[in-house]
Image (cartoon, rainbow, N blue to C red; front, top):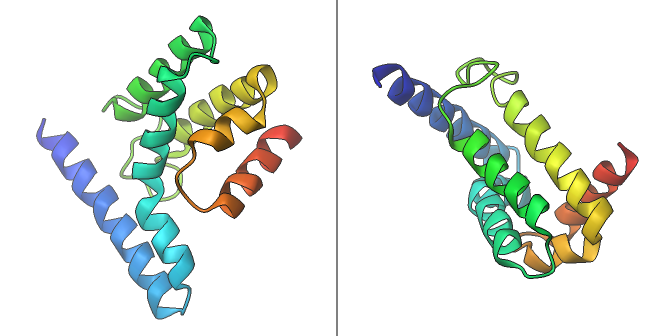
Length: 129
């Protein structure tokens, strides 16, 4: 449990440093998006899980994505800079890619609460993969 708390503290510190660095660099919009990324992603996943247009298996995969991200057990430990969250990102990206291909990008965009331009970029990357 102590290792989890330390890992979360390090991840939060790196996240805050990145936000502060963006503000100092004059990129306030990017800093705001980074600060709101986790709440926006959780809102997206929650909205998709409760949406009747999403199939049962896709909902199951979304629950797996939430559990994977929340789980303290990772393929790559979270406290390793840059590479730590990589396994989480890959799992969520693969699940979103499947969802976009089966349900369409409009469904995902309907539940995104963040910057619409950011979602367009994410969907463009998902379609290209």
